[in-house]
Amino acid sequence: MHTMTIAEMARGLRDGAFSSVDLVRAFLDRIERYNDGLNAYITVDAEAALAQAEAADARLRAGDATPLTGIPIAHKDIFCTRGVRTSCGSRMLDNFVAPYDATVVSHLARAGVVMLGKTNMDEFAMGSSNETSFYGPVRNPWDTDRVPGGSSGGSAAAVAARLAAAATGTDTGGSIRQPAALCGITGLKPTYGRVSRWGMIAFASSLDQGGPMTRSAEDAALMLAAMAGFDERDSTCVDRPVPDYAASLHDDITGLRIGLPKEYFGEGLESGVADSVEAALDEYRKLGADLVEISLPNSHLAVPTYYVVAPAECSSNLARYDGVRFGHRCDDPKDLEDLYKRSRAEGFGAEVKRRVMIGTYVLSAGYYDAYYLKAQKIRHLISDDFRRAFEQVDVIMGPTTPSPAFRLGEKKDDPVTMYLSDIYTIAVNLAGLPALSLPVAPAEGLPVGLQIIGDYFGEARLLNVAHRLQQATDWHRAAPGGFE
Ligand code: GLN
Image (cartoon, rainbow, N blue to C red; front, side, top):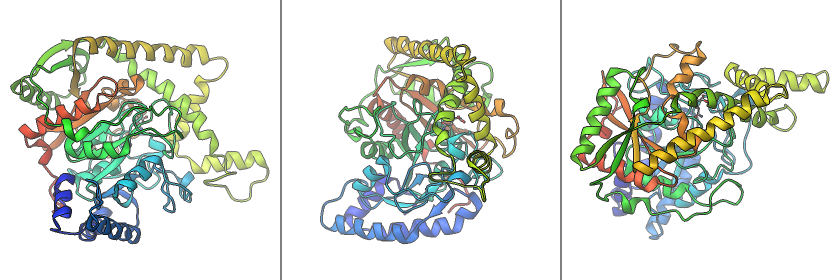
């Protein structure tokens, strides 16, 4: 059962081949067997999952099911879940149990999914390797000496090793697409504003966006349809109808204009990754697409711009963790200042502290114009590059990451090298565009991701273009050994 896609599971549930309780038991058994080796889950709630499965079975019997009813999924531990701890990968929130569900969680629950548990992640979603988690690193199921990517590494590893049918993730600079690429799954970062951020713990509010992590584009279409939609509690959520993403999956792509940014194929790209991307582009040629070279001239400014904007916003967002209202509080504070200082010093890890310090610096009176204001201007230039590109082409393609999964510890002590692993994903967040990563041919046994970037609210087109490749090839069906 665990090897099926969501669409296949839904068919089995509808036809009565198995129940949601059977399905959930099978996944809970797998978590029991394999999670210790992967550390993909921080929290598993078997009892609640089985109760939800029973409710789903009743709905299925009553003929009131959606395509997601009874499907066992996992939530990144950044989404608030009522009654189940939401740690955000941090000691700061190790004891935090939210009194409400995030909108993404309640939308999916309304569709009838079953939550198996909460997945591991880089602390406050800051990282590209899952090594900044308070709960220890996640291991990549394809090679357990390697990182799964981050920050949604637990979700990616869980889906790749078949410890969940699908999972949620969040992407501020690449955290859905990069781990999806490194673990060989499909991950979609929607247009900024497509999915509500309410109840999703804030890192950098103008960049954060939740999305699905799945084994196929078809599954991503089903998940996104349930996750998306207007929410008045998020003032940046866009009031726009949610298309039937599954309906357009099979659309013909003859004549599709694919832009290949020359900046994404140059120095720094490993040859194995380049070859796999080329092989996928050949498939698109066979499917009738036209490939056009384009330029995104400000690409080289994306990483430095992001590392001003994201820390600035995080330093403001994380000011709420003061030891007073919720989260970690130090023992025996001698006064208020001591309470703030020690609670934050003990609660946050090194990477979070680095970002808070950078953010505070770039927002300070003397440096605001030089750094923050300048970064905002460059952000415009980067958006303009994409706007011009989409006058010429329908989608943009390139590698998701410059290399396959790296070894645990390899980049941990070198933040700048770590930051560069998001070099192809970060500009998309600065512009607020949707983008998807899907697995293509592996390089030396390790997964490689192809990134497809779309125009604003072009999720249906992205899913269609990805699905056509997945119909023509088997790359997305590959599974890591050792998790039978
Ligand atoms: N790796 C990037 C960072 O550390 C992006 C993280 C994310 O998308 N949440 O900021």
